[in-house]
Length: 120
Image (cartoon, rainbow, N blue to C red; front, top):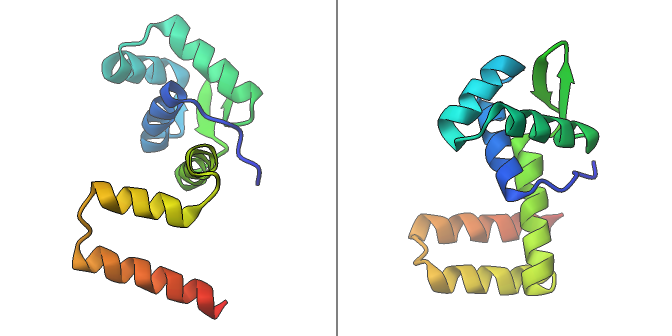
């Protein structure tokens, strides 16, 4: 599935939606006011824009996502690697690991992931 682009503020909105869906749009307005400081108009504008792009569905005042959190995260990461590291996953991992000390468990998880790709 080709995941539509979700901008940062829209992603924060989606985090609330993923945690509460399906949710009545009135309740979603309250949640966005509480967590994001948004007005009713801002929330409805974001719902409309994400609906137009196929990220959410607003049917009978009930809002649900059409894109999973995992799909959105993968798309955002792929876009970031393409834009920042010229599509190079090794360059991304090298930059990431220089900025953060990896635990032995994390190194083992990465090694297992690489091994699983080599097997396929």
